[in-house]
Image (cartoon, rainbow, N blue to C red; front, side, top):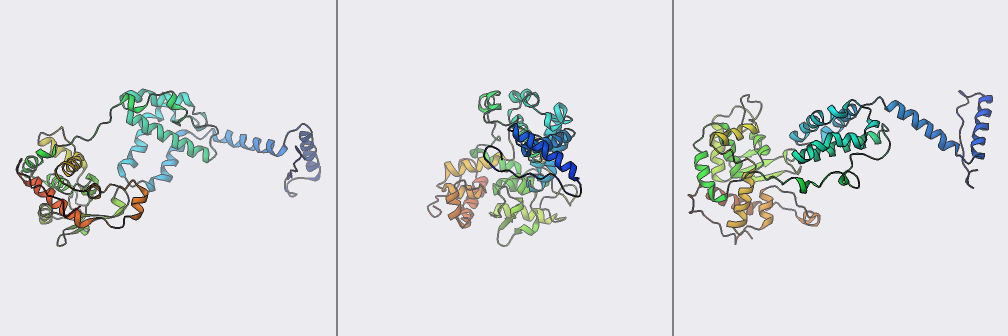
Length: 366
């Protein structure tokens, strides 16, 4: 009995503990009870201490590698998957990668993160989050105890300035929509697969990765439809893209030189061209001020300012996830027919001389 509560404690298997040893263990347990100490809790603490001592040999780097190994299969974005080990190797392992995971404290976390916080704030924030995740994993596996020294709320937020105070969010450089027709005319003068991929990216308002990974089995030229499977979409859901006449023209040109399943193949037909190839196309055109992703903003700005397109049609065209859970639950369709009209109007705008844009009155679409 301890504090008026009955507790039952085993002393070990009869195969391993003799009667004399059991009597001695029982005597020691009763002595602890007389002192007000719970012998069961004391034994558990001793076992935990032994586990902790063993865990001191497990380094942070070992835990990080095991964490990445167990989670990588769930990371759909190849860039995200590559950044995890790369950022830890660059910014964390040199500071405490070889130290026991139990030894990681606030001082060590700050030593890794603080120098980056002003110069590379977004990178520093992601590194901090990755350290926190690894330490949470280590605690769940019994390799460390105590509070997580990399946590933000109630801890590092008191030691580091808010991101908004030290860095300005840099948006992807975008071309003003009024200049898109002239840009497209210049782009069509460029030779090569990368130029065609960039043209197709602009005409479909798709993400770069979606275009680079496009395969011919996804394309229905007759139906003017591109169906992107869910595993290649950011939201993990299949997305249908309406192909305008201009987009079809790009595909027909690529079909003439088809060498495999990839619509925009690289030097090796088994692999698509890289994102850098599109960026180099922009540089050859003297447009270092632009990014490929920024053309999605160009399209979005055009929709908002030059058409009566409902916002949900625009968001569907951009394959943005519906943030409102109630709206998402009730929405069953993908507004495809409305998006077909929108993408056709966008293609006409991209082809029209500046100042002669064909502005679609979206009365039929709203």
